[in-house]
Length: 443
Image (cartoon, rainbow, N blue to C red; front, side):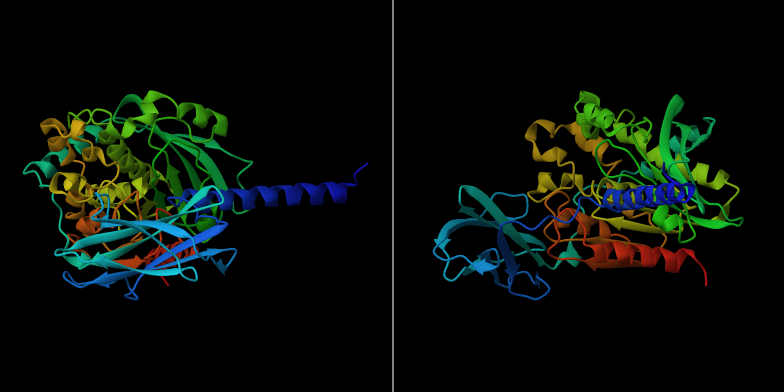
C-alpha cells in the first residue's frame, strides 16, 4: 500500500506537473506559433544591412548560408526568387553554393515597402527553405484603405445596441486548474443577441484585494483556452476569451472536429458582403462585452486594464482598445486585418488576404472591409501600446502592419525581431510581460 505521506507527495507533484503543463500551453497559445524547431538542413538568409533597413533606391544584397548539421554544404544548387512580399517575384534564378555560401544582388525598391528573398534547396529528397525581408523606409508606409465618414457612428450605434442585451454572466469553478493562490473559472456572458454567448477562462488571485486586469484575445482558429495562470500569479486578474460562441474547455478532439466544419473553416470571410452580417461584428462587440464582465468583478481595481493578443488577437487588441476607452494599455503582436485593401494597390494586404483573390474583389466586400480594417481603428488609439513583429512574417505582412502602426498617434513602442516569421521569440514574450507589469502594477 502507498503510505499517506507518499500519496500526499504523489498528489502534490501531479498537481504541480498539471500546472506546469497549463503554463506551457498558455505560453504557446499566446503566440502566433511556437518558434520553429531546428531542421536537418539550415537555410539562413540575411540582408547586408545589420538592421535590414534601407532607403528607397539603395541596393540590397542577400547573404545565403546553407549547412547540414552545422557543416557548410558544398556544390549544392539553390533556387531563389526576389520581389515585394506577397507579390510575383521580379528576380528568379538558381546557382550553386561555394563552401555553403552565396551573395545575391537583390536590387532595390523605389518606394517604401518590403523586398523579400526566398531561397530553397533540395537535399536527400527533401526541400528546405529560408528567407530574409529587407525594409525600405517602412516608417513612411500609409494605409490604402479609406476611413468611412460614418465609421465611428456605425460602431457607436453597435455598442449602444449591444449594451442593452443583459450580460447574464455564468461562472464555473475549475478546481483541477486552480491552486492555493488562484481560482480558475470558465465563464460565459451574453453578447450581440439573446442566446449568443462568448466564453473564456478567468483567473483571479485568492488573496483579498483589488487587482489590475489583462484581457487576452485569441489568434485565428478554433481551440481551447488554458487560462493565464502565469500573469495571475504576478498579481493580475486575467481573462482569456474565445470568439466562436462555444465553451473553451472541451476536449481537443472536439475542436479538431469543429475545425473541419464549414462554419469555422470560413468564418474569416463569412458575411463579408454586408457590414452588419460580417462574422467579426459579433466578435468585436464580444471583446467589449468581455470588458463589461471584468468591470463587474469585485476583485478588479476599477481602473488598470490592458488588452493583449497576437495575430488575429493583435487585430482584436487594437480594435478593442479603439472601441472602449476603459482600456488603458495594449500589447499587440503581429496584428492581422491591417490594410486589407493593399492587394488592390499592388502590394501586400493583411490577413486573411481576402482581396488577394480577384473573385473576392467586389464592391460590397471592399466597402465592408473599411469598417473592419485595423488600420482605421488604429487612428482612434489614444493610450500607450507595445507592439512587436518580424520582417519575415508571411501570414501578417509587415507592409500591412506598418501601415496601421504608422497612423497611431498615441504613445507607442515597437520591438522588431527582424528574422521572426509568424512566431515569437521568448524575448518578445518576456518584454511583453515586463511592459504590462511596469504599466499596470503601480510601485
